Length: 228
Image (cartoon, helix red, strand yellow):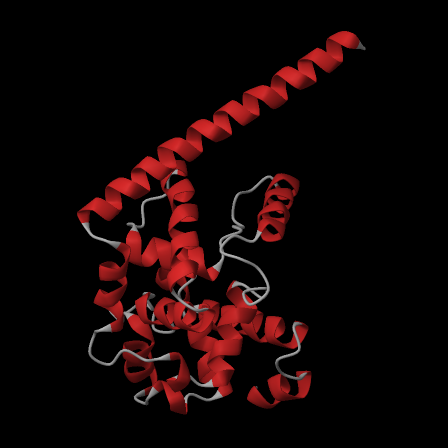
């Protein structure tokens, strides 16, 4: 038993050392990125764009759709959702796949605005520091607006304004539930879920969004049934 305890303690110490090392390297990567251009300047490049859509200009249906499918506890947790991370870790191990992530909307803003789209563990750690800085400087509503204005929606459309005009030829404020739920699902994988790329997969993704909206109480099943 003493040997087992020693092994467990050694493993825990090793994990702590590795985690500390990753945090140190991740922070260094984040600090280097900010030296190139400060966080606020990066955000202003998005918020000062022509046709930037503020939170108040977004239809509530679309906001609810985005929160439901991307980060349903967005207003209840901090920059990092440790429950979602644990759930994603468990699901990926159970299914022997690594398709589910635990990133919050704030972390996705960090990825879209501060970093590039390359997937590596150092950048993921750096996202944590960026997410904390974002929530120190901006409200949840501002962060959500930055998110939908910085997402890629496929077909060459960046941001909700271009996507709404490009796909439906209307202002975001005029999106219907059907349209809002379609667009809310696209940024997860624009090359797959863009309505012009694969209409069938786009509809399946839209249904997933609608199911999440029902699950979290944003709409009723009757409202979903009326779409089809």
